Length: 396
Image: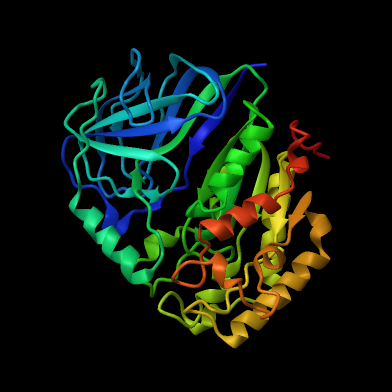
């Protein structure tokens, strides 16, 4: 059976301070595909763009891990104008990709400021001057905004990854019965500390059968869009209940999902990120998570739910917020049969000596987000037997 399968994707939000200036340049995304394919197509998004984007073209080619082309490139047919607020999908191009091999997608932007995208880990995104779609050897140039990102990383003690503009999804026409697993979450997932080692685990256990697509947005909430009082509200994206259709449900190749959202609904209120009035009702937050799971299940997706992480040491945490987190987790555990599988994230990463806290060796400098050790603990805790049934869930 032939099916278009995502081999890479991201959720879009405004890039704000990390946007790309208006000049002719090429964005080259270097991918190691977990699945095979005989054709390729690309979805581009200018959803949060302030200006129309004029494109010179899009190409794909085999390459090495550094983006050096190792074979002929193929041009993908497309409409050259991408209006602000819209998306488009290229035509398909013939490109044979083996599972585990590298290839790249190169997009030349002739005019238009790039303000729609995300900050994602685990992928190499190069910015090249001019039209370098078919250049064998990429010569990336630094950006001024990279220094802003490094300074923000040092100040916030949160890893801010390389911004990836414009690109939304790369798909391969697969004939091996592959499907994709979507991770739908916030910065705990976006930063990749557990998602990337999990992807390596599942690809080793089921070679060529799954790609892992990380559609997570930092600061994202279940029930609310980012608060209008937050100066960089764009980073946090629209609420999960609204973006679910765009980021998950429109893709028929998704067979499984890992749902890890809700902590920001509790953390943001009464901070610089949100008003005190944005405090959620516990039952509403739990029901919002269940609603996300049920919407995916109605499309045949098997969903692994999760408790919220213990966040008592976070700078935005209070005793009240941690107590509310415990109550939400009680509801999630008591109703875990509403998911197809369940990960007790709080139990896996919690400090047994200090309830409401995450083990200190599992988190980075902000005392909230996982480091490599904590991420690996989460990745190892996911039961891979959940993925043995690759066909989609029976829909009643």
